[in-house]
Image (cartoon, rainbow, N blue to C red; front, side, top):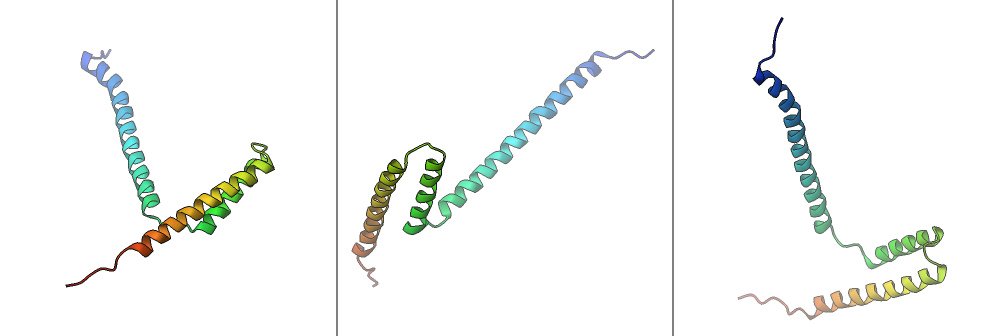
Length: 106
């Protein structure tokens, strides 16, 4: 009849938990890489145009009205506010570009 030694018993118990911990660490590291890649893509992607942003706002607000989260009047009010904010943002960006002095070369 074979008997287990003390080292065999603890080795069998520790091995699965070590694999689980290692597996979790690898999964966490993979998650960090995916998150960093996604964040880089968002930062490096060009900003959508004002009209594309307004279309997205309109769709989001229409969805909120359909789900009865806001009223139609609230949606119209919010859309007007957001449209003004986007227009003033676009104007400020245009002013920044126009006000830049030309580069001088020696």
